[in-house]
Length: 248
Image (cartoon, rainbow, N blue to C red):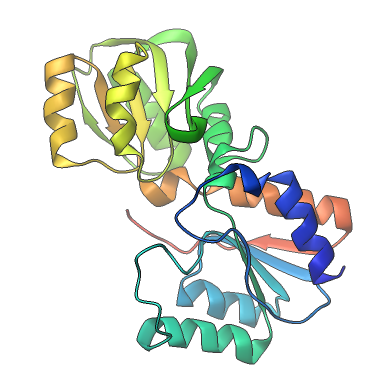
């Protein structure tokens, strides 16, 4: 398929004009015009780019791309090595940040909730990124932590009483610890995100609402995978998800 056809489909599917983001969404680095092989991954690190080049990828699809707001605009050092590899190999780089978090079918939040068996009932937070819902059956915080460990293959950090009963849940993948206060206001028994800040510990202890930091990378592996599979099925291209190990 042609690069422009792929970009137009992704931009429309993910409704990128709706979002005020911290980076440009869409095609970030232009490569060859014809796309037969697509590699997806969470972050456009040098390790992922090298793996994609070895797989003879025509395009790479990621959640964390480049050109973040406030970063040094110069193409030097690490940024130069990454972009030089893409341009030398003529590999396209597509990146979708908040649109991929929020999508109802291929979004990180929708898929994390589905994998953990949550019943989604609504959204909250800036641009309605965060999700809220219920557990199919009430459980304890300790048991929920064990399920997260089995599902994400990573033990989460949990602040709260392991025997606390969890019925109402709120979640937002990645670095969304800033939504914890809003989750408390939504009446959640527990809030799940990727990372935790120092003040979240005190807020959890004082509010009685459990805070679960399940890993930035670990919580954001599913959206880009599902989106890549969708593109392969719809357009008949080859797709492979490459998971570059990240303990965070």
